[in-house]
Image 1: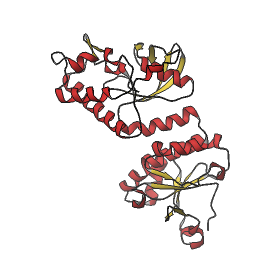
Image 2 (image 1 turned 180 degrees about the horizontal axis):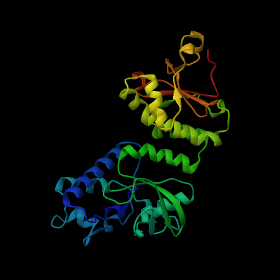
Image 3 (image 1 turned 120 degrees about the horizontal axis):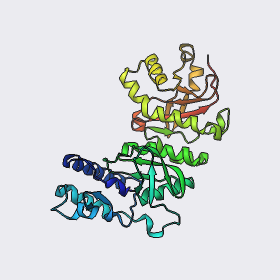
Image 4 (image 1 turned 90 degrees about the horizontal axis):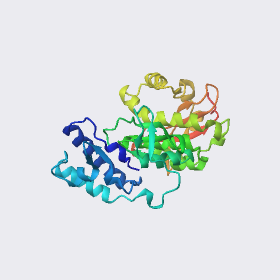
Length: 312
């Protein structure tokens, strides 16, 4: 949903405002082309922009708006396509909210709607104009309906973090965890036979540790691999600095065809070697994965959840 309160332009100059609106236009276009629908408050055009301006003036009054014509037209067209979230408004939506680290409460019905959803363990992300003083990511929000955490973002790069946050906040079933994986971990492919039952421990206990490890593999492994030219020890040290204990197999195990065959995983008719593994604990529970592979569009295969594979 689009946070109307983020259109408060504050002390920002014309160049900053124009750049922010251009970035918002790009984000809305990307979201529209993807699978992430956006909705808006029905009275969005009355949102206060400061200096006596409302959003309607910003878009439709060429004498008063700081926007150039092209970006103004792009935003007008983008907003016109978006549905209203309040066509069937649930009761109890707070119109004013207080956001963590913000100096005072603000009139923000959309954030209020997201807060109400959060109190019911349902996650709603809020798109913001990249001028807002509200920090991105999960922020604590308070309103008449209670307290909760709402995810704010101004870049599509933050979407995986939103989907991970939904897993933390909503505590979905294991099958729902896998369904959200494509959005939460866009650089990974999760093998269809993965199961938390292959670990030593329950899904409820291991969901968050697995989420954290998959996030670091998704965000960091390929970057680190390229930075150190694939030097295994350097990869291990760099990923360790990110809080992930991982390694490839030992020299002795790698010298054993029998044991290395146990690290091979078939996926869509292609065999991938998943010898690299992250350790949830020193003595048990491993996540085995492949290197980035062009057969997967440069992504990595998460091939196995396992207690521990035999070693040579």
